[in-house]
Length: 272
Image (tube, rainbow, N blue to C red; front, side, top):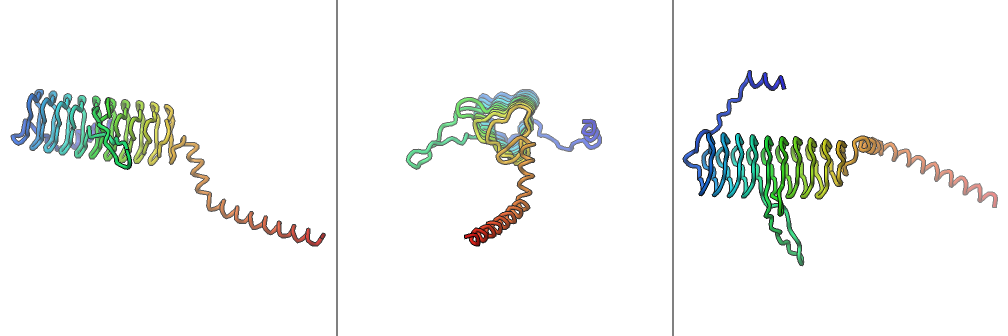
């Protein structure tokens, strides 16, 4: 933290955020803007959007009907917030992210896939940071929730009805299937994938590229595919690394057994 503060003082960011409402921005009916809100060029705000004080929306964004955005939010270019999404205070959303897209819900009847309506929403709580090109789907009926202080890296997909607790780290290319419940202070490392309808307890960790196919208790670190407790996974991996040597040993033992069986058979023939 001390190093981060020194860097900020020695090399302050040169980014100049938009100020005011750009003349090319399009505002719908009954839009409510707080003090010192900035809207960049070619951004669209549909009807009944509310944006609170000191929030900044860069150019090329689309904010759909009935979206609510809190104070001091920073939204970079080409972000899409779909209808009825709620964004808390001091949230940062990087470019290309889509929040509130339809959940992946279909039913197949006689070989034809029929869409199941996704009529819920997404709630992003205070102090969340969301990376570039993240997709967070709306719930089927209720809410997809990202808890306070959680940080989400680039290229993450969070499916419908997922609940993520507070102060989690969701690292790049993670995929979280529908209706998964994640506790507080959880870490999902790069390229972790989960099945749906499971729970991950507080302070749990899934190491990189783990395939989580069942619930993880609180405080447990897992690894591998399928994911296992770390110590078990390391032992399994060590055994796998030894498979070539074990294969050679088994082959040699098999050969000796065949030779022994041949010798026994010859002895039995002589006795007869």
